[in-house]
Length: 128
Image (cartoon, rainbow, N blue to C red; front, side, top):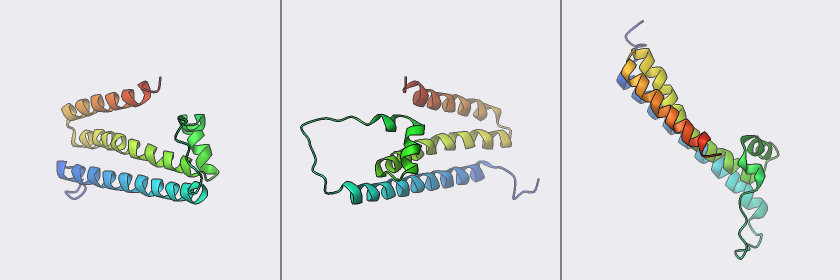
């Protein structure tokens, strides 16, 4: 392995920072596109603030969100952008596990696996 391709703490930090930048930027762009589509289609609809309406069932599952995105609904695209935003730190932690394993740093691998487990539990466990 050459010195340039060796995984160091500095290189892992740079990749993680890039991952966060790209993830947040893509999710923001996705939410923006969904917002524009939603406003073009529903921007002049009157709002009824007297009645609370929760999120429709189609937006409570990944498959429902993806179906909504496929047909071009603005709210579905916004929801996808929010899911991408939530997935960004999860991807960062998952990459960190791989980076620490490449460095052969077992202690950080174990700690990061614990963090990933807690993150995934909080996401999946809160849905039930």
